[in-house]
Amino acid sequence: AVVSTQSGYYGRGVMKDQELLAKVKSKIGDGQHVMISYQWDSQEIAKDIYRRLEDVGIKLWMDVSGDMVGNMNDAMSEAVENSALIICFLSKKYEDSMNCRKELEFALDIKKREVVTIKVEKDYRFDHWLGLIIGNRKYIEITELEKVPEKMDELFYEMASVLLKEVVAAPAPPPPIYVACFMK
Image 1 (tube, rainbow, N blue to C red):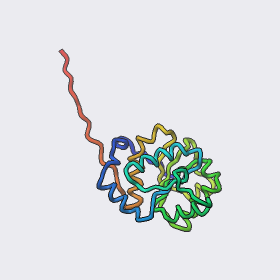
Image 2: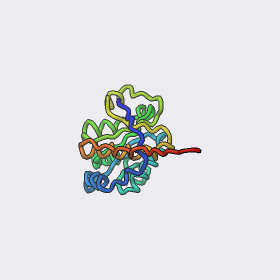
Image 3: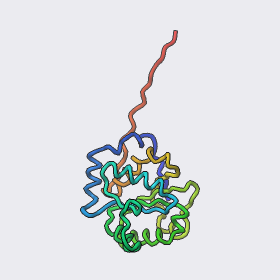
Image 4: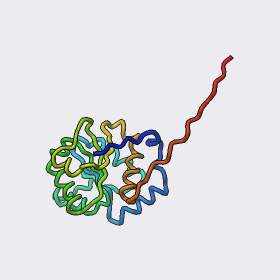
């Protein structure tokens, strides 16, 4: 897998780019959403990201937000079918979860959905079936809840790149300002 090493300008409110936000929203069709796929131990980070994306008007689906209705398998398959994009929060427990595995395999193999991946466990290496599926996909590393704010713009640009099927790069940071100080 390829880890994103972008830094610097992310986390400075770039996600407020209204033109790009409008393009991303337009790629999420009527009746569609961005699905949050996670294992319960990653719920705090997943819910924080859900809230931040919801705050900018992106339509989302997450089981604990009241979207899981009726039979769990039916609800999950319907959520995948109606997704324009799936954000997966990857960890060893995600890999060990049969429900997470069914959900991701269904999304990628059967429904051919777009996926953005977030690694939420510091020293975790993608092994077994998850390593096979994830392969060399780029992932964003967010292993602590406190890191979510500074990673949101990076996540948003990755979502935009996947949905718009073009590389969307963050604007370059402003040039440094040098201040000279003369002392007598």
